[in-house]
Length: 421
Ligand code: HEM
Image (cartoon, rainbow, N blue to C red; front, side):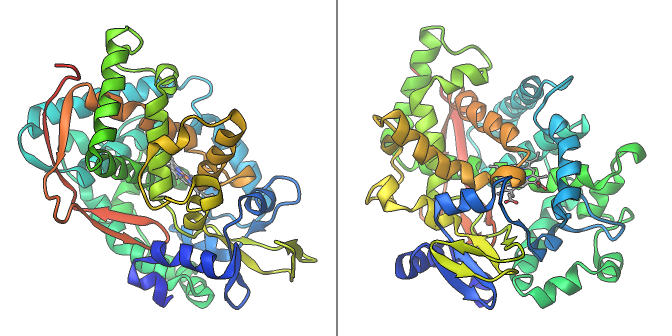
């Protein structure tokens, strides 16, 4: 709990892996696991583990559980089967068209309000992501970009509550209190709240007023905004990467390969863009160690050690993407080239490490399709229109890492900058 409270757990996790190997004991009945193959196995549909009671942390409504906080495997599977169709944009919903409408809004917002000024990309990117997540899941954007603000203090409350909750709930005893019905009824978000998550719930139409939509917004807004901020900082701080990416976009536009707006299919064919995106996830994963799974009755053999039933296994996401045997000795450096010139097999193995950051098997993030769509499009649309500069290089942002990354205060300056112009 002390390590989590310091807000720098991303520095501690790879050291534990280096010192003790991919499996290490971090508390009574708690293990930390940084081995890809074992993570894939223990999270798989067949023979995988179930959720630990860490998932009570995802409970925010005293009236009951949503998909994200259900502990029973059968109950969770059944709810997820229903919701996945909507999340992945199957059926009526065209996720790409929804995304394009918000991208157009973002580009207009930058052109109208942000050019030649210093603006906070940490705020702007999360307004964009929250509008996308709500548009995709409830059919209309939350309206952050239109209002140019943290509407109803949604993020302010999240920023204050998440680090605190993730720190104290590393203790199982604290989880018993915070997930308790009475605690949530008294102190959890309420539809009558003037700000934050409760205000969000109140803002939904009665028929929609359901935990699943609220959870989608909570789970979907900042998670996608994290790589969007990390990318802007690392790309702009690495001039050769910035220039190469702009050149790839310029070439794509000139040859007619990149329409406006870019479609997912074309974005996937831009090899440098793909290398940059994977490297962004690798250099600073959005989650550090969360979503613990619990060993089934009878226990399990894990990394060749026999472990008793009821043991909780936390993924070591940072060790996973700092594996020198897979990514090379310079794992601390932002270098998209490490993804290029590989055999198909090598590349696939590297990509599986990044895929694991979204979870696996029955636990895989339902917003993964949406998040990749967002990332594949946003940088092409920004860099085909503008140049971006970090406005305070001596202290570019404030970043703390608990279970998830908390990034704030990232001042940038946009100027008109069509590639090749
Ligand atoms: C870069 C972006 C994202 C990352 C890295 C990410 C990562 C994750 C991870 C690691 C999990 C838990 C896996 C486990 O239990 O083992 C998860 C679950 C979840 N994510 Fe995401 N996520 C992202 C974006 C999104 C978006 C955009 C949405 C919604 C629009 C979303 C909605 C959810 C929900 C609802 C769950 C709970 C799933 C369940 O109950 O099975 N996520 N995500």
